[in-house]
Length: 239
Image (cartoon, rainbow, N blue to C red; front, side, top):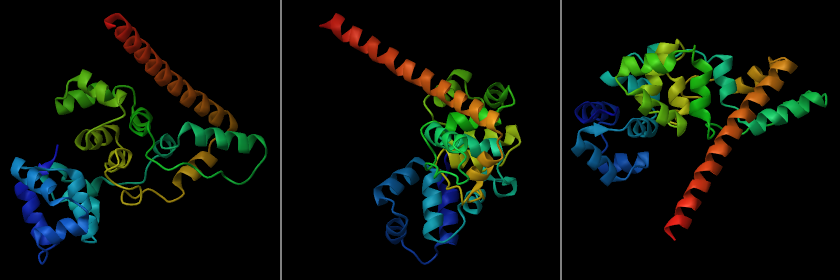
């Protein structure tokens, strides 16, 4: 779901009343042709709103909340759960933490940046009480197979990410972090939140976490290998 072009035009006049469209695009790092195409289609992407908000020194969450499609977003921002924070630590960093702890090191290893390639799926699984897919599909009208395809590909549209957060009872901005629309800071995530959440895990919990992440990685690699083998077989048969 993008936001209404008409509403964007009204908001843009409030956000930067003295700036021309060309100047605003330059400040926001947006191609003028890209914005023009979005306005012609009648739908402006969330990323465009966020980039304009940043260029105007406005809080992106508040900016998105201006639009009907994201009304209530700012009011629904709250601190992330430990499970959400940990979901944004990739398997390499988890293994580093596990090794450091097993060797008795007190210092937390530097964690990789996020979102990572499995951020969306990891976050969704972390906040899923067990029936989130079914409830999300029913609430949004998105076909379950389309939702599964997005998650399998490591994607989730911004409106589905917000809807998932609402149904799961977590911060409405969290899904926009893992999908890359907002930065963690813009969504109110603590600077050292991931490190603190990992520190609170027991040794056994950390080992089980590493096991689960490696299992997910193994499944993904097996699927890639299977798809590659099928592709190779098809090419050989055609040849």
